[in-house]
Length: 493
Image (cartoon, rainbow, N blue to C red; front, top):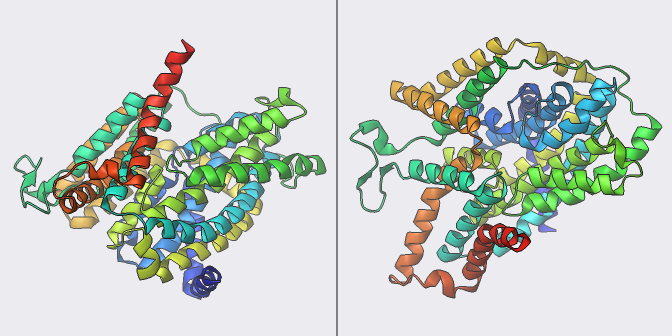
């Protein structure tokens, strides 16, 4: 009953005229920017972090919630019409969705994606509402040693499980950890890795890193790729109303995708990639016509798109309950919390319960707004794809620089932005995942603080991390994530 009362209070706040407008602004901007190729929710939120700095925290997070859901909706449009996923969770959607578009069934593909996203998003948000308070009770059992081990698990899963190469993932993580060490050590007062540069004494702002990696890095990458092979846009043809056959082939994949996406999105491994691939494989095995998969099967769009949006809500469970980001977008959201001096975790639900439940309530409203916006206006969103790429990414570069400069009014931040943008471009060219870098940057200082606290409480006894049952279990799971794939490969040989 406490959860229901808190949720109703959240709806009372979210239903105020001002917050309804903020939610509408968030979902509209999220959809519009998410439709644009190569621009996912992480970049969308990163771009608007400097803009929302002066807003009330509740209003800002209602906007971020709308941006998060809206960008996920928009990325499916890009995948279907342009075969260019705006976010990694839409990669699977592009396989059959684009084939449907090439066969003149783009409208049906967009409709099943929109309705499936609404169904999955609503059910998963209900799960978020009732699972998060339970997770908070578990989090209250954690001390410094357990939190440090949990962060080690997050480092390992984000680096080792979500990329093609464990080595590349770990390399990206260590770059993020190194950047997180720059600045004055809060305990000793010593400057670390500043190289005598005074602006680095305060460390590197997470917003600068996020905008550089996602905005500049993506803009450089797209400019390089388009110079080699321009994209081809499919037209939206046919009725947006799904046929009776489309409905009968879609509703079960929507529910199955939700059942797969939300639990997997809630795990420390998190993310949307694994749930969408699992949903695709599940639908192919259960299909009466598996030969259609890869050629434009509507189930291959309905299931993965539902899993994608259910996983999005699932990712918020560890973020709000433990303060653990399990994807690049969650890491940017964590940076947004820190921008307002807030730290997600058990204390957030008690100290800032109004903000948390207003955010969760706004997700319900935003999900409904997205359905209303996406179905009748899909042709309008598709026209955004006709914007010439030089103008589009030129605008992103200008907006990024203005936003970063407004943080401290320092030219030094612009040079940092450019350097990090080049690093982001090189990482994409060499297929290094960006998410571990952001997670390492944000969680690194927190993990260091928890390690020092546990070490001090244990009076210098390192075994505290192995004698506490929860801490030991988390470290064993982390070791299994790293060593398990190696052992399996050797056993197969």
